[in-house]
Image (cartoon, rainbow, N blue to C red; front, top):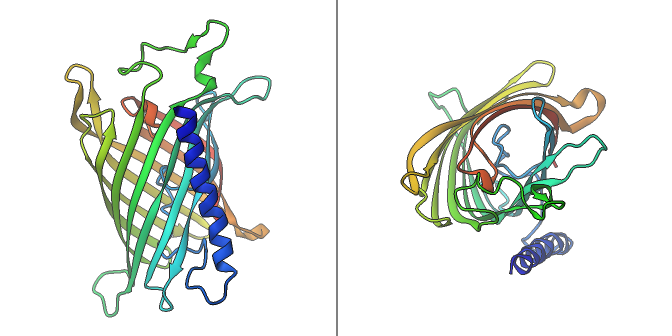
Length: 292
């Protein structure tokens, strides 16, 4: 059943990727695939669809992200857009023989719509307001890197409160509002999960963040979320915990790689990986992010 679900998701993602360019080739169609999205991806949000390779500096693990958001339709005024999101967030173990067995992976796909409005004669130090609304599905799975083939069993099966493997699936609506001007942006977000497995998870989570550009193509960004905390004693989420991702990076425009940035992150809070959603963690990464 698991393989069937993965095949179905892969087929849907492939269809979206193929349909976009085909529609873009038709001059009479209002649908044109573009990665120049009306709502720019959040720099420090670790759950933003992106292409990134981020080794952990204090652990023998590697974060590998493969995904992207794309607008399928933008009106002529570039004030309204409809798009798609698709991506994977993988946790790989680093071994001495340059192999990277996959411990776990999250799959996400969905639709989004975004709005842009110019702020004229505003009292705020921003000249643009943006809103993005997402409807998404995400599922998570343990993989071969979390399985001991010699012992024929999962690694640390007693660590998970639900056993291994277990079903992790969530459907949610996410809304993010941002104020921006050249070189800076602030944003607030709210997410509501209308279906979740395991159950008894708080449906609400909250988000805030800021980004600022500095000279020499350097930038600083911070993303903070209030995420529900699972308690084994009650079998549900009763409280929230702040989860931070602080990022400092540089865009490689000086060598002609405008879409590439080198970034360092400090992450502290509840794990972003679905199969570890009950587990707090803290680590530092240094790697490369590609913005299409």
